[in-house]
Image 1 (cartoon, one colour):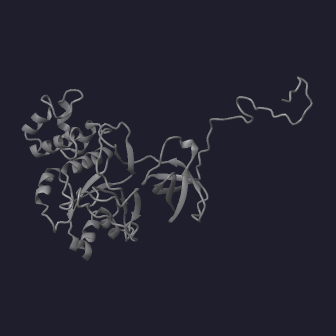
Image 2 (image 1 turned 45 degrees about the horizontal axis):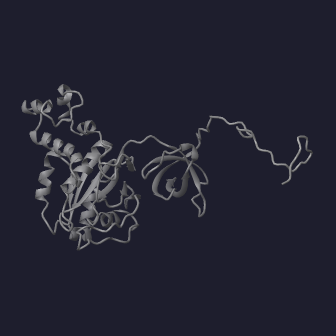
Image 3 (image 1 turned 90 degrees about the vertical axis):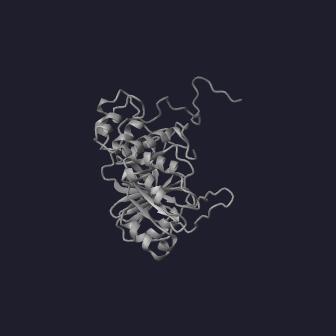
Length: 336
């Protein structure tokens, strides 16, 4: 082994930089005041496709954002190559404040919440009336997530040619949720698209639903271009649908009057992240009655002040029953 003395004159010896490196560091970060504004359309393995000035740009998240992740629907600020040409890459340097958030967990025991969509105005809950059978518990969970995240719910009931919608609509009548009932024939003729579009104009709408209910087929009919060419079939053995959407994707309506966000089909919708005290905000007719509730009231216990409030005629008892059914859905599985 070659050794060097204390006073060597060799000029090829590697010197290790100091602990703080060779360049001074600073906590001051650029503000990127001239960054372009964009909207995240989809996320795929760390690459985000964004809409910037009418063109799609592929970008990656800047390191200074840390663990903060951008999701479909996010408004972001971008720098770098914004031409949108092949093999170019921009950089997301800022995620703007969100107006709404649709979140879920894998199950009710999972402590890690996942943001599915940001900045959506409403949540379209797509449910088949048959093949597969409707799952009211899953609908309840989607409603709770919508109310908690600041989204207005919309029920879209498909395959009405196989079963009537009356019983399911009666279950949610007290919630005054807007709804659209469609059949396969109406979807083929375009009548279903026309009636659904009437609820989507001027809004960003996230579509969510159990696999096999026809969600992606409906989205394909709504948007200008068929981005989801493969539609799934219901498994004859399990009665479940096949996942045809693997990642959330934002698409403009045919007349560019609004946006549709297609999300992957769900078989469960965990609510471990939901604070029950926020769900009451979606019931403005009941919320004043909670002022006399005991501290940390779950609104489903003997001392809840809502019972007296409703008994005095301030609100419809069916509304309180619906609220408590939604709150109780955190303790019940979708199939219960």
